[in-house]
Length: 215
Image 1 (cartoon, rainbow, N blue to C red):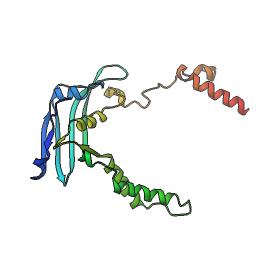
Image 2 (cartoon, helix red, strand yellow):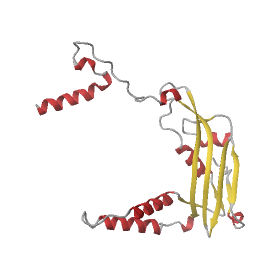
Image 3 (cartoon, rainbow, N blue to C red):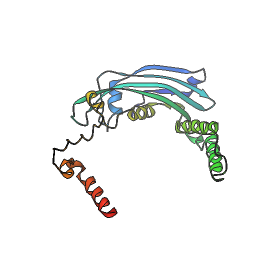
């Protein structure tokens, strides 16, 4: 993805927020999903974000959508997925990047309270919520370089993170235990060992040894 498709000149943001509501080309999506099992379905995605600037810091907030196909992890049948990724970024110039004082201060305060011992009151609910919000803000922080804010690599990361780790056909997703089938009921007179699913035999052997030790 050498060519940057979604780039905003910083000078444009001096005149106010920039609204981006554009198609994400299929060719761009194909390059973005290289190295994954996902392939675009053949129709463009959509990027809808608002880009604003406060001093030298740039905030990007909105949503990205893309339709992809992935092979089912069980049957290898193609499975369609409509990805919808929340986009939230706080970007600062690369040369000025440094630790976030607010987030560090909140973390230190919580650790200090926790170090006082069990008898001391822990952080309040409000303090925990503020610390969580600061951690979320810190996770969204990154940098831009030069006089343009290039969103392409960030957009790719947001979309790739939406890919399911174990893609399944829709009719298989509702199964209670998709990975291991329930072993058949033992026939009358059959021993417990005979009724064990072969895939669970190693676990059964360990359990049996533990029972023997206790006895």
